[in-house]
Image 1 (cartoon, rainbow, N blue to C red):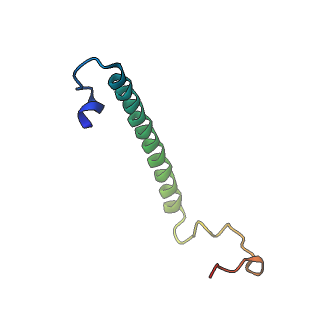
Image 2: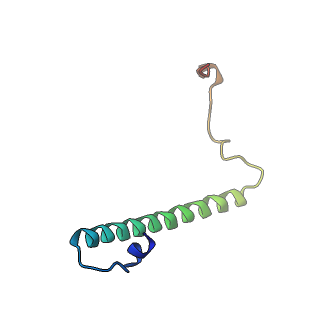
Image 3: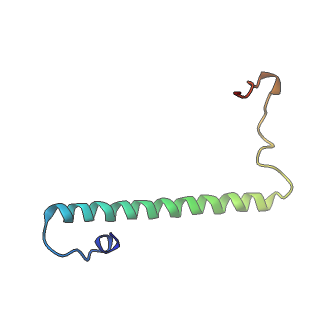
Length: 72
């Protein structure tokens, strides 16, 4: 499979070539998503570092009296 992703597939079967292109595109899409998520994670870590001792949940108002019981 790794060889197929890198383009080392022999032959000229159009179905194999189409599948290889599809898989290469999927890998590119996943790599782009990974870069985006890593950037977002870095930004969140920087925000946490700027405000030590504060919780990210401090700004969320939760009314416990309105909370529903957990399923049992």
